[in-house]
Amino acid sequence: MPATVLDAPPAPVRADAAGTRRPTAPGDRPTVQFVRFVLVGGSANLVYAALFLLLGRFGDQAANVVAVLASTALANELHRRLTFRAGDRVGWATAQWAGGGIAAVGLAVSSLTLAAVEVWTDSAGPLVSIAAVVAVSGAVGLARFAGLRWVLVLRPGARP
Image 1 (cartoon, helix red, strand yellow):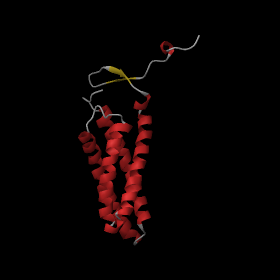
Image 2: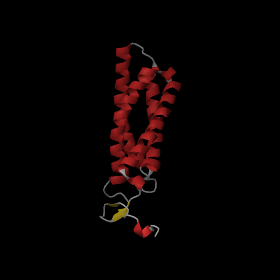
Image 3: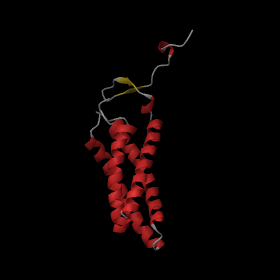
Image 4: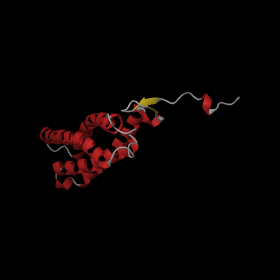
């Protein structure tokens, strides 16, 4: 006899802030969210690199600030809509404040990293600067994943 929906294993469940248990889609699992997070973040890093190179004539620090702001705003919105599928639960401003706050720390660290690269490498070129900032972005990205996941998915009081 063919398998039916009734034979399927029960869907995973989670409890919301009120304790109500709700089914979760496979895309709600943290590992799947992390894969989407990495893909969105990688795309945002490509936007960052393109803007950094395009704006390099204004200096590394100015190019870094503009590239970080633009790529972060894009990434926060994509994370809200795609990574965590929270577009119907969490507004644009909430995602921007959450992701932007963590990104502000990342901007400070990346700016300090750029300054150190400039001092230590004596004009190594834009690719070394980009590599250094991307490495810092990876570490900040892990913090952003945890922070955004909490705000967009796990936060107490968030709507299911």
